[in-house]
Length: 107
Image (cartoon, rainbow, N blue to C red; front, side, top):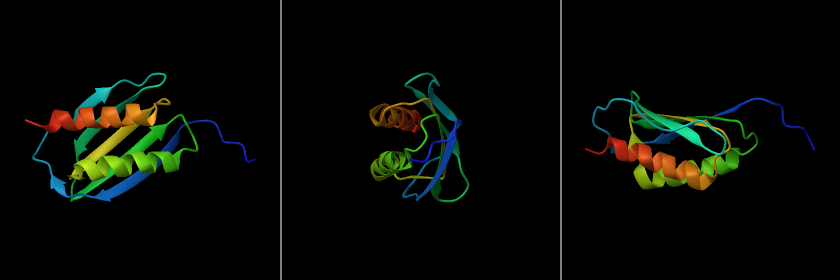
């Protein structure tokens, strides 16, 4: 088995957006700590939703892809950049934080 190198892993994803978001100020929810994460939403030029994950839990790209595919199916954000700083949160916590961030975009 190949050892996993130490340090953070950075994962980048891009989704074609379907739901344009009106102008908004950056949104931050959650906190970086053991078993938790923070999610930041910022305006992004273009119609895509760009996601960058920085995580201490290396080797879980397929799980991140599944969680983010589900998020995009439910929200389809367009023109949004999502930054996630993770310290080993479970998929359920990731989904919760993403939904909390989206709720902050609602008037």
